[in-house]
Amino acid sequence: MSKEKKIDVQKEGHVLLIGFDRAEKRNAFDVDMYWDIAHAYGRLNDDPDLRCGLLYAKGDHFSSGLDLVQWAPFFAEGKMPDMPEGVIDPFGLDEDRRLMKPLVMAIQGITYTFAFEMLLTSDIRVAASDLRLGQIEVKRGIYPVGGATVRMFEEIGWGNAMRYILTGDEMSADEAYRLGLVQAVTEPGQQFDKALELAVKVSKQAPLAVQAALKSARIARVQGTKTALARLLPDLMPIMTSQDAAEGVQAFIERREANFKGC
Image (cartoon, rainbow, N blue to C red; front, side):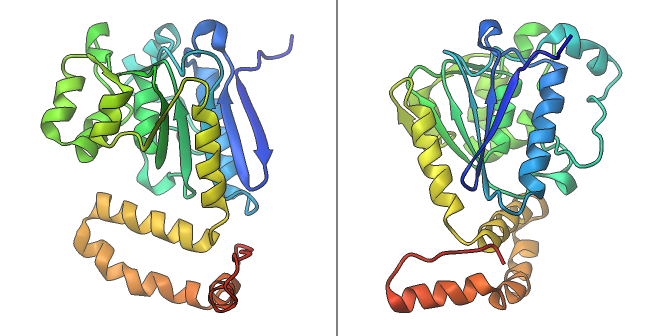
């Protein structure tokens, strides 16, 4: 019997589209989906022709959260499912094995637990106006272990983060936009198109520069401002000798859009 398809992965130009495809179950996230997403992230990370990812979900809801029946045994042992070589943990718990390329995320409807935590690992977020964003683990007798307790207060401040983590209350699209968790709000059904527009725009920029900018920002978050500032010019040096850097200057001189190759 063939494995049920729960993740749809397609390449569109330089963008890798990664879609949850389990709408009949409100895209409840089981262990197979975790592995499939990890492999998709690994493909995005390793393929030089891919410059940006777009994570989205089919159906009315992004995800109702973890399929706890499957995940409970792993949590009881204090671990996540094993990750083989060449894949990327969707929760980004190992900073040394994070996705090195930008990830845009489109969310709609119910977006609970791990889905909220995956949002916190993404770089640009677009929400439909019907968003119901919730870190609701405390209502299920557990607490977030996919990074929310570390990342959310960095994004929206301690009080705001604890307001939602400790109560399990839902957050609306307007509130998520006000707090800076999402960068655009659309009518329901339009969030994918807006997210794709942004992903394509990212993919048209110089890949080495985009990845270096993302790396620098992450160094600042994880290792601190002093370390990040000290790395700015040294990490720029190899980029200055790239073909893309020369193309960027030439395109500026000729007043045209640059055609970057990623080298």
